[in-house]
Image (cartoon, rainbow, N blue to C red; front, top):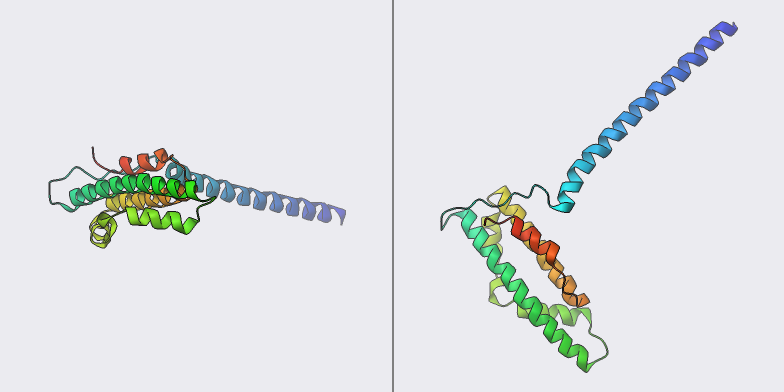
Length: 165
């Protein structure tokens, strides 16, 4: 009878080891797959630039439009920072909504209606990526205007990496 108990105990132990091994393999594969997707996205590896295309093509229209909007963001950020700086000199603090209003007011007409450009960029995967990078850059500008900071290098590189030379 004790031989049967020893055999049962060994079989249970073997079953536990096999099931733990399966769970471990699945967890390692999941972590590896996740890291394989997250790391390139974080560091911008494998960014697909828009192809250099003929004038009037959707890719060229998207690239030119995004360049113009990115330049408008730079101008608006500089202007809004100067406006917020002037306000800050007059009062002890600047509220977030005042800084955002100054930024949005400085954007000008280029950012008034971007839905057509967004649709044009959405016609290709690379255009969608470039549009998303531009939206991250805009959000970065908004945050920096609020925090009165001037470092946009990583976001600028992200937008530039997605545009043709």
